[in-house]
Length: 267
Image (cartoon, rainbow, N blue to C red; front, side):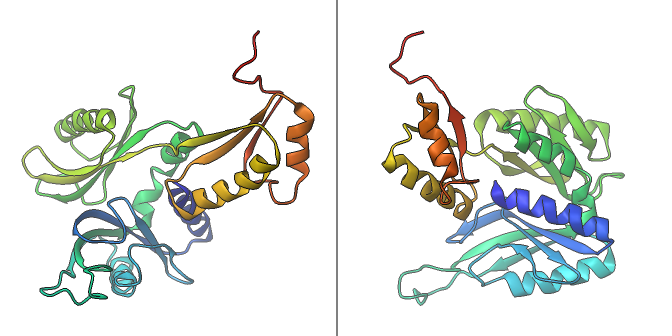
């Protein structure tokens, strides 16, 4: 989820500066690929891209198409098939040996739902974003979005009430299943139904020297892997946690719970 946070912050910052940008999102993969559906690359008009889609196999091509999208002002669905007939990638079939489908759009469309996404991240709850990829339905344009929460409340619209209703049903199903996929809505709207889940939380019980060393390591792992666990350090001795909070290696890397009751204590 940290990648999504970085992309959201960049979209908001660049939008405030009036800079054009395009957002590329993996919506489907086949075979061996570095990233899975939901991985994002934000390409600003100026400066370096934020995020990544592969191990360097596609970023250049995607950035070139992103600039075309900025110029045209309309979204594109593009595909790259990097599967090989022979096993010539390090001799192991590794690397970019797969097919990938990427939705590239003017990022201003995505900015419309950044508030709802940020709210879900801050509240640590799941949320589903339905994005129209291709459509033959009048009023439903590629890039239109519908945000669906587990309680059934929604933000935004795909542009048609019937399509919205079907998208909401599908979003609830996938929220319950905890997975993302492409679905066809109303017979002619191809949409990416993406479930965004809060990161796992790792609770370290005790503020001894082993936990003091482990907490920063786990937090670094969390930032390196976008869906890695966030760390919480708990110890019944407030002074022990305070000592960790003062440690330069741990400051700002974990959530510290002072005076937390130990698992074996009685009320």
